[in-house]
Length: 245
Picture 1 (cartoon, one colour):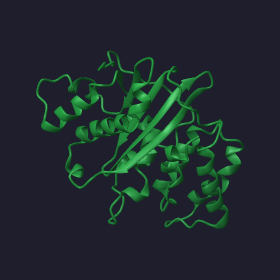
Picture 2 (picture 1 turned 135 degrees about the vertical axis):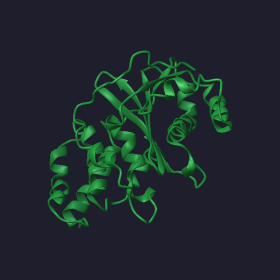
Picture 3 (picture 1 turned 120 degrees about the vertical axis):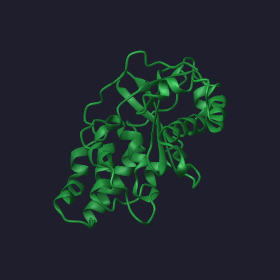
Picture 4 (picture 1 turned 90 degrees about the vertical axis):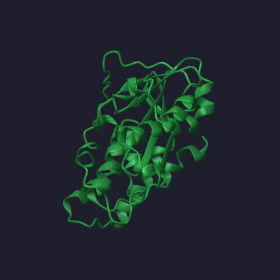
């Protein structure tokens, strides 16, 4: 498997506070069934919740952190891309970064193909929340364009912004939205609303420590709540949620 697809995980920085640790462990918890001896791999990390700020990684915790990152990028978690199975693009946009996961569904569940995240550019930091969310979709589709255009069937985009299901059909678009609409027009997909609390995977990429300014993490309530309760994946689809391009 090409390692460049997973460098976003391998390059994840060591968590510096409880919020960041929750984010990372939430990501790990989602795939706990695919990681051999996963409960043993996180004992030293979960014990850090009992300590005061700042987090102090001992040798055992640091070792488990590295082992867990490497486990994300090895079988049986990862799958090779196949143009036949149902394909999903999950996206998330935080105040300062974009995160996305490309995955496919097979008999044993939903398996990731690639991860992607990047910081927002200075001009993009001023975008409205919905434009940041739309930008996240555009960049994810551009990133995996070769994969997505080779699919035999349409794919699904999951977003926590319900208005995106309908907004791009509006006749009144800003200049940026018009450009993005043209970019999206070459893809055949449906867009589905999913509550932000369930966006564990792309959220873990868009909320990493190293994407925030030096002044610190934003005091966002959703960062405190979104990651730990993700053992069972649930599908939430609003009625009339499909948006075909």
